[in-house]
Length: 331
Image (cartoon, rainbow, N blue to C red; front, side):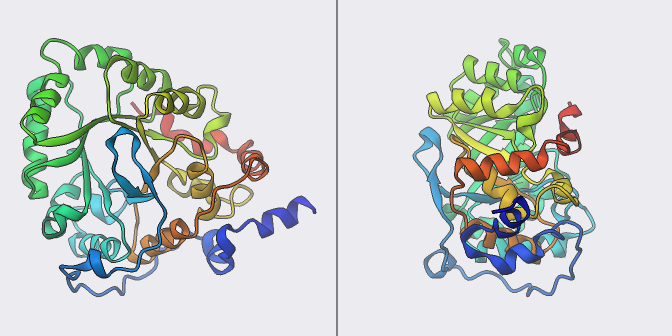
């Protein structure tokens, strides 16, 4: 079988129709024709969801392998796109998405989620983040997040974009943000705690070694393995040994992985990441309802890739890894 034939046939779960349009995934800005009607109150019991689920590390929670991200250049982070944002959130609920990711610094994202999710609060997993490194700053973020999200607790609260060891020293100081995290957990304002980062894998590993976090949210995509300091071999084995939940972000590299000559589409991008040992789920933002629904279809069709398929994808990203790990420069 030729390489071109392998590439052409490499569609997960027999999703030929999905695969044929995947190459245009991020570059198409389709119109939003979704209804703005509210999701049924008992949607969880009636929804037909076949999305695979995994246990999120030591939390013991079974969650779908795909969650909705609340950042990026999407409606959820735009102050002028409330209507579109609410339509995306409601569509996610209808599609069986239960993991919703946001942060104190994501513009109106928390407020938009707070307009829809409260009536489904017991059925969804709600995660937010703080960029605060000291106790008081982290507490201010948490109080504001709870108010915007219209909830009295978070399922997961995370230290946001930790990039340097100096930040870890601040977080774990006597008046550092870790104090706020432990106080919030004691007061039952948060259930689980995590650390996130997309800059330096060694820093995240150091954080996991310094504190018993429940989860880590890190940037992992099919180009990561080519970076001189990859997340995959640095963070995943450590997290697996300690049964820490791993959530992947930057999976399609903001669509850059779908440029000509790289990956065919989301089936390869998501399939690669979810086939990595130790990854429990991924979060991906959506520009439109149609895009969100497409991502969910890919997640529902997911089947683990074998070593040959993984190696083939890595070969496709070998000459484009810098373009697809551009976010590693962010701090």
